[in-house]
Image (cartoon, rainbow over all chains, first blue to last red; front, top):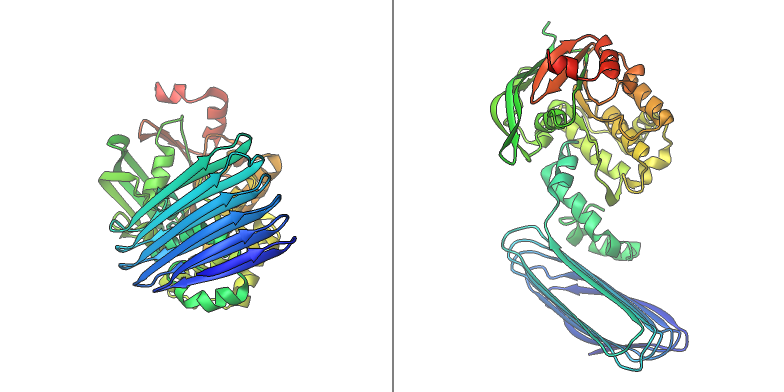
Length: 215
Length: 251
């Protein structure tokens, strides 16, 4: 278990790289006027990744942003469980999950957002999007909102799709190879999370990323 | 010397089992500019899509050849390598991929398949800068995401810029003039004119004659109900502007 805590007006950013065999539970606490930016990148290779996040927002103006990208191929599996509790009024959270799957890979995401009765003025957002590149790939998104308070702003959205044929055609009609055309669109899809990584992390991941995206 | 570049013979094509093109015949020679006009639903955009290999369209009959080589069996990228270019009515936005990265990949493939050496980074940049002038764009355009946040006019100028970079043998420009204000229209029109050579050919698909204030075509064809029903010289566009299509269709 890994424990992450920010308080006293601190602003923390953590990048979590998850590779084949990764299995970890995180307990995260964000205090008043503090914020935590978590960026998670999952590259399961041919194995499994499993991450569990227990996130508690424990003070006014506490804010947590969780941005995750995973790229799964072969027979790999990616599992992410997020339990996020707004334990204080006027706290904010946002989650973005983006996954690209091919081969026989599978992914499961369970995202619970809980807002107890006394916690008003909450802003909680959750987005999960997956691209399935091949027939054999599977994905399951389970968003879950438990809201017991009035005056909260909660939104969630979930999509599972394929590469857009019209967009692929546009790129190919310019002479871009079919493989690169797909990688360009995958880059566009993954960019929201990739853009949050610094250059040294990108350099470290370069070899693993190039089969998926063009950097 | 053979002057024929593109040959379309008895082309029939459908989308979602509905036949749109019902026997199109067209021969385009080197150095020529052809205009395809016609009422809505005539099949103009379908023709552009079929030529460039959009998988949405099914060809049931006929032949298309570029410089004697049959195009119908080729994928869209193979057609681009062979020298075909289609400018889109609604160009795709690709966030996170810069114009430069995209064009480098496209030009790299096109040059490789045409047996030309790869351009170095500085050669690419030099070429790109000089071609940007054709459409009055500055080099900051190269580092922007492909078509992301571009105005309608900028998107169309970007299409012409890509055409300038890829140097196609046959360029099909699908409603490149739609949604342009007067300045953008002048820029796009002038840009296309500069790309006209004795070795290539251009097919303009349009509703209006206004782009033809800048580009004087060799031929104007009227497409109606999936067939070319009239072919004539440049003056036909003005007649259509004044009188519409009915007098041609009913003749």
